[in-house]
Length: 120
Image (cartoon, rainbow, N blue to C red; front, top):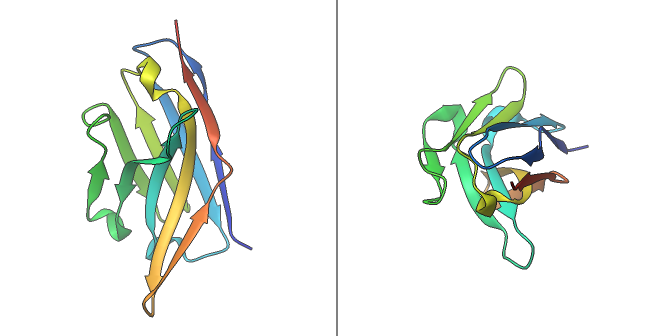
């Protein structure tokens, strides 16, 4: 079955760095766009970063541009989110998402999420 398992979250002081990892299984990883979303308490889930198949394109939320970097390793079925210069407003549960569109139908797979807390 499809599994997305996030890791690497935790507590960090402002200005620090964290690297999130997402391990994927149960589907053809290289055929899917890989995204990181986050959801802060009382807020909607938002797209943080996304990477197209083959790494041909990346997209970032304005709030994280220049601080976060998404990458993927298709050989290992892994996607990463490197986060630098963390801010308290980055505090959220971060979710790994895989999205594929086949025969005009879109499939979305989600991980359970990993908590990131940025506080002094």
